[in-house]
Image 1 (cartoon, one colour):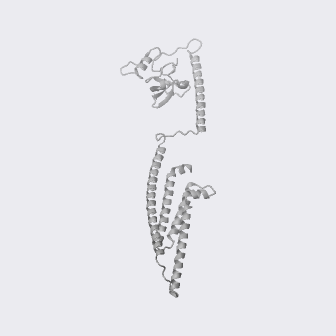
Image 2 (cartoon, rainbow, N blue to C red):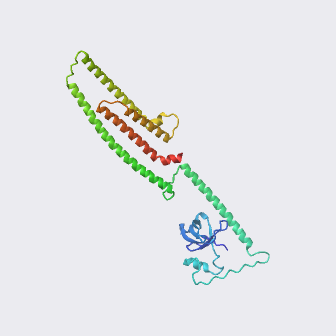
Length: 328
């Protein structure tokens, strides 16, 4: 008679078992650990494979039966081995005599029909339990999708996720370092701008305090007036050019590009377009004519700002590299 582990026989470490009828026959195996108060256990099969979870009463499911092939019927050896943790004969034990074959009774084989009917009932019961379990799991999956539950994976679940997390952490550290350097450069540039503005204010104050030079009449006076007019026109043109370049640089940001484009555009395309605009601004700034140190410093500040924007674009593309690769 088949003894179901967990129902007829308690599950214990060292118990010799087999899969019940209706499941894939894996041969004989030994229970290596018991969990959930005997609800399920782990089995190491003689073939070398290992099953971590086999139900022995959990949720009303039974997967294992006692393997009595190693113990002759009525010998009483199975309980002794189970209690002592032995799963195979010790050295020096006498080999067990083979079980005598069952002789057919009159009118048919011994117990063939009851055993077959019992196996059929167990198989049908296992199918019903498995169907109920599948329905339950599908319902749980549907609920998780409906509620938007997100089960985080650990680095042990997927080595690629662990590698991606390491790359993200590295990029974040690099980004923080670049931001710190950028802030330091901004502070230095702000200090230089403040110093230049103070020089401009002092120059204007001295110019206003000094008496205006007398403009001589004649050709020399006309030359001075013409030179002053050219100087004024140059200053106005330089200021206008610098203001236009600054506006173009502001329009090169990803936010401005995303807001102005009516058609959908990818992140890589926006970064590429932003870098092209920044390089155009830098090229135009390098061709602007200058006359004084103040002009040179103003253009240098503009070019440094352009380089910082381009560096931030590169780091943004690096941080989003794995995400963009998966999306594409």
